[in-house]
Amino acid sequence: MAQWRMIEREVRDTLGEGTAWSAREQALYWVDILDPALNRLSLVDGAIARWAMPEPLGWVVERTRGGMIGGFQSGFAEIDVEPLAIWPLGDPEPHFPGNRMNDGKADRHGAIWCGTMEMAEENPRGSLYRLDPDGSWAPMDTGYMVPNGPAFSACGRWLYHSDTGLRTIYRFALTETGLADRQVFARFEEADGYPDGMTVDAEGFLWVAHWDGGRVSRFDEQGRVERSIALPARRTTNIAFAGPNLDRMFVTSAAIGLEPSAYDGALFEVDAGVQGLPTHTYAG
Image (tube, rainbow, N blue to C red; front, side, top):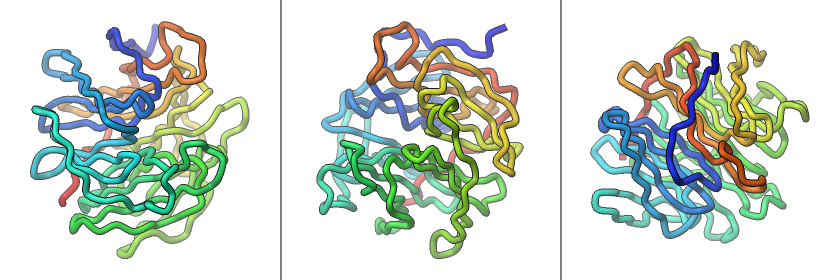
C-alpha cells in the first residue's frame, strides 16, 4: 500500500520549499522560491491559495501577534496575505547582492533561524542567521554553499542544519548566546542524493528530505537511518507535520532541472505513522 498521496492541484512548484504549519489557521503554508509565490493549503476545506511574490522567497514563519515574517532575496519582511501586503524589515547581507534566503524556522524562544546562499551556487557565501524577537539579527555560522534546515531537537538542546552542497548534516549545541560544538551528524552518499529540508518528530527522530534521492528518511539520535519512505518526486525538498494532532506529514518537491512529470514539483501527504512537534512562532 502506498504511504503517500499527491495533493491534486493544477500548479506545480518550480522549487517548492519552506513548509510551515499554522495551528491558528489550521493551514499549511509553503513557498515556491524560483517562481516566487506563497502557497496555502487549508486543512479545514482543502482549498489551496497561491500569492505571487515580487522576488525569491525562501521561507515564512508565523508571528505570535498575527501575520508572518518572510525571508526574501532582499532580506526580512513582514507579510500579510488577506489582502496581500509586504513591509521590508532589513537585509542582513547587502554586501552579497547575489545571495538569497533558503530555509528558516522559529525556535521555542521565538527567534527565527535561517540560512542564506549564493543564487548561482558557485561560492560558499552562505550563513546561518538568527533573527531575535527584538528585530536584531546576527550570523551564527558561515561558509555554506546551500544551507538547509534548520530543525530543533525535542529536548531543545540541539539544532540540526545541513550544507546540502557538501551532503552533510550538522548538529550544534544551542547555548544562551548562539551555537557551540558543531559536529557532523550524518553524511549522504551519492546514491542518497543530497540532504534538504528537515523536521523533528515527537519521538526525537530527525526526518530529512532527499534532493535527487526521491524519498524522506528518519534518523535516530546517532545519525543512523531508521526508515525511509519513497516518493515519486525525484527532488523532495522540505517536510512539516500538520493537523490538529500533528500526525499528517506534508512534503514539498521541486521540478527545476527535470523533464516535466506528473509528480515533480507537487505537494505530497505522507503516512509517516508518527506525530510531529508543535510549530513555534516568531515573538517579534
